[in-house]
Length: 133
Figure 1 (cartoon, helix red, strand yellow):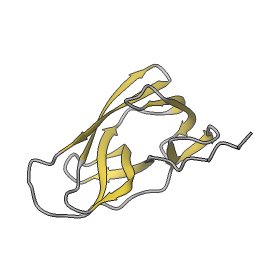
Figure 2 (cartoon, rainbow, N blue to C red; figure 1 turned 45 degrees about the horizontal axis):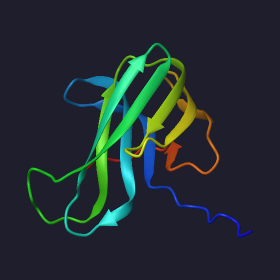
Figure 3 (cartoon, rainbow, N blue to C red; figure 1 turned 180 degrees about the vertical axis):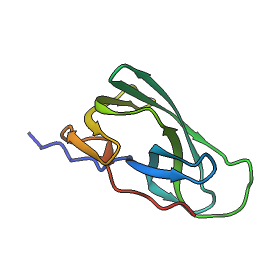
């Protein structure tokens, strides 16, 4: 019997602290990106976030063509900011095909750490900050 080929992740999720210049507040950023690089446009990833107690549910709904059709290459991206997170959270991420990955994320005002990751996920979660241009 042939072994199953390990699939590469489809997405990355970076969770990190960021100072928002507009609101003058620190926020926790959830930045979802595709691992695939698009050469024509920087598509937007549509996703919903529901927070209930210490459970964060993130449902990826698909890609959206940007409103401003400027040629630009790069991964598709979606961003969600929150100012009220503190403690240990169960993060559940669901793709359009209903595949689910579950993580444990510890969020404090000083740092964010990924406490538990599933084996062979479709989305790689890290606390590495991403700079915005």
